[in-house]
Length: 177
Image (tube, rainbow, N blue to C red; front, side):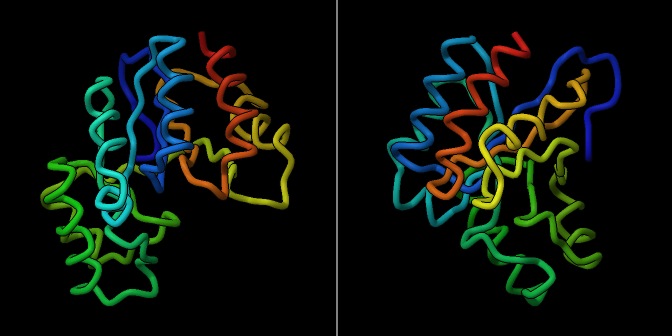
C-alpha cells in the first residue's frame, strides 16, 4: 500500500526506526500538541532496548507496527532469515502492519508476509535520514507539492534524522492542522 485510497480525509504520518527515548519523545510531544495520531514502524531491537518509550507510544493511542528486528534490507537477506526478523518483531508489536526497511523486499518475502500482514510503504518520503539535505529540503519533500487525503508520509524517529525531523515535523503538523 503506497497511499490510502477511499473516502478518508486524513494524511497518515508514519515514523520508522524507533523507538528512541529522546527522538520518539519529541515526536510524541509534537503529535500531542496537535492531537494527531501516527503509526510507528518499530525495530524489534529498539523495542527491547527502550521498552518504556515503546509503551508510551501505545499509551498515547498511536499504532505500533513491524519494521523487522535489526532493520535488515530484504534484497540482501535470505527469505528465511528475513521472515525470522519479521516474526521476532511481530511478537513484540502484536500487529499485522509491516514496512520493509529501505522499502526493499523480494517477491518471495512479500508473498509470505503479505499472507498475514498488510505491507505499508509511503508516497511522501521526507528523507530526514539523509545528512546531505537541509532541514528545509526535508520539509519541502513532504509539503512542497501539497498533501492530499490518503498520503502516507514517512519520517524517522532516529538519531540520524533528528536535526531535520525537529525542523520539519512541527512545520508539517502546522501545515496539516
